[in-house]
Length: 127
Image 1 (cartoon, rainbow, N blue to C red):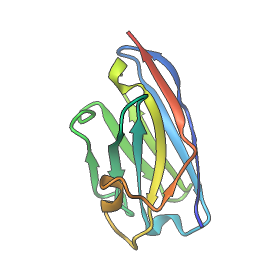
Image 2 (image 1 turned 180 degrees about the horizontal axis):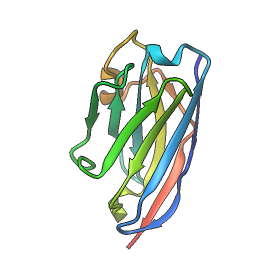
Image 3 (image 1 turned 120 degrees about the horizontal axis):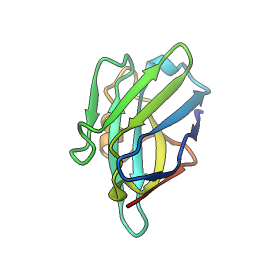
C-alpha cells in the first residue's frame, strides 16, 4: 500500500509559476516511478509528466514540455512538479501517481493506469 499526498496547488495568473509537491509513504520510494496526471473540468484525464525510480529518466506531455519540470528526492520520499509560464489551459486537478513496477520508467503512468493515486490538488490559472 502506498499513500500519496499532494500540496502546492492554488490560484495563479497567466505566466506565473507554481510548484506542486507530493509526499509518498508505505513502500520503498526509490523502487518505483512517479508522475503527475491532470484532469480539467469536462475533459478526460491527461498525462503530464513521469520520472523513473532513479530520477535519471523523465518524460513530458507535449503540452507542458519546456514549461514543467518533474523531479524527485528519494531521501525525502518526495516528488515535485515545477510549473512555469502557466496558461489557463493548465487549469485542472493534478494527481500525484505511482507506478509500482520495480525500477521502471513509469510506463503505467503514461498509459494513465498507475497503481496509486493521490487525492488531487486544484490548480487554477486565470487569464
